[in-house]
Amino acid sequence: MLKGTKLYSILFNKCPRCQEGDFFVSKSAYKLKQFDKMHEECSHCQLRYNREPGFFTGAMYVSYAYYVAFIISSFVLFYAILDIDLDYYLVFLLPSLVLLTPFFFRLARRTWINFFEDYRPEFAKDNTKAIVTTTSESPVL
Ligand SMILES: [Zn+2]
Image 1: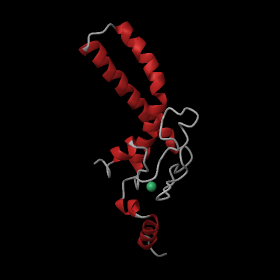
Image 2: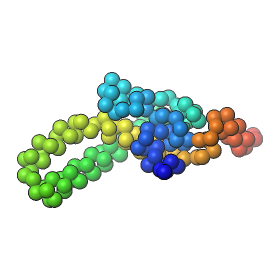
Image 3: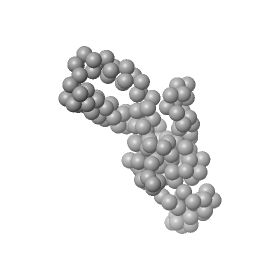
Image 4: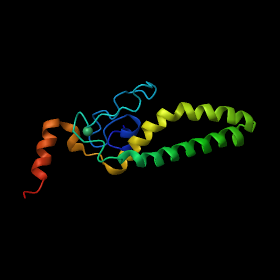
């Protein structure tokens, strides 16, 4: 249902261009030895994920935004809606932030690359066709 949207790529660990190949090596954010291991390129369309050195530095700002959104929404839930004491909220919040770190790390990187790469259905179909299409579209120099 979501296929073809950026949300699909971000949520399901898929390449932003073809949405077929995996982005991170591990499907789970909580295999802690390899939660940050990314494929060099997409196994389906050969999109190079790390476009330039330091490309994913910008993902830190996205990660920050996710943390802030989580803190504000959990504060509203606990303090304003459920009327739970602020001390209990902090007891909940601090371990939650630590536990969510691998999840937000991966989510932020996938969000960041989706800012720069759009879904292109011609790359989703077949590996060889996509490569032929790309070369025929490129201008002859
Ligand atoms: Zn791909």
